[in-house]
Image (cartoon, rainbow, N blue to C red; front, side):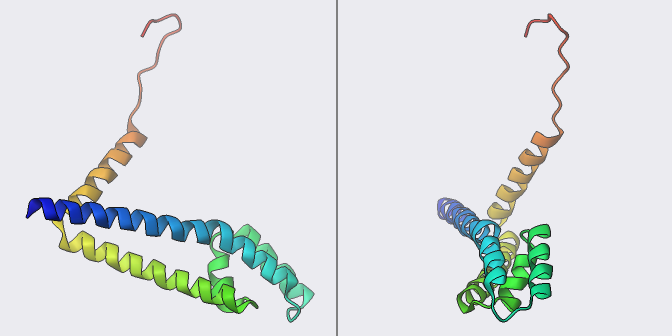
Length: 134
């Protein structure tokens, strides 16, 4: 039983990593650029609206595009993909919370990774004196 749970937990973690990676690739790179281009070429938007949206999309890169893409984009495909990404992010969050609360091994693995990650941030190496050998 432990081996099956271990395999399941490993598969779940791998699935989360792949899904999250693809979502972040789209939402951090492809979709923001697409939003700026969509706004700039939108014939139905006035010049002032374009300027405001483009400035917001550039200054709030990675945040404003979530809202522009879902609600203000002229391109129907961009609106659909952004809404799909929103739904996908929510499903990933719900699945992660469910896995974290229902599977002790999954929770222990995440907590161990978090401790190890935090340990890397707070570890300090001793200062070396000039001329000292290692």
